[in-house]
Length: 241
Image (cartoon, rainbow, N blue to C red; front, side, top):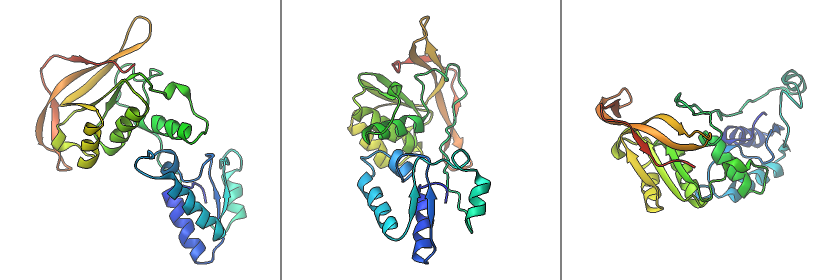
């Protein structure tokens, strides 16, 4: 079994219950995938994830951490050694907005930020450039992952946290509860704002987000209100850091 996230855990659970031996390979130093390394602790107690693996271990699971299939062991070799192989590697690659300067070192993909913070909190290895203590943070998007980012940034001691979303509050794809929790915790929301570029000064420092106002349009295929750019002038929102 490749991967120890929710899919791998579920697969291992039912296989072990059926009396089938399971060996699980995880490239990270902690088992659980995004449950352990991505979802913030204020939403999911990491002790519950650890307890689940204790139960699986007692049932016969052989867990191999810090072991990457394709590097530490060829996939073909894995297929030769086992009767069946389940691949549950997840979808951790993010999607960028395609705007100028988004490859700046202080522009993070959501999962990069969340996983590094969770690794730091778990006393694992992490990259210090993801620290936001005393910084001004802007998060682009209105889904639950964006809410995880803004609420994590608040807990990490950011000076300010602003969320930009191209529609209004009623059309946010994330849960209403997450939005209201973020507001209560001090996050500022700027609705109907679409980022056009990240602003970098002559010294190469990231100093702002240039965005334009949008107008709500007719519902899209998913049932949510569409948005289109308005002719209003662009606005430089507060800098990230």
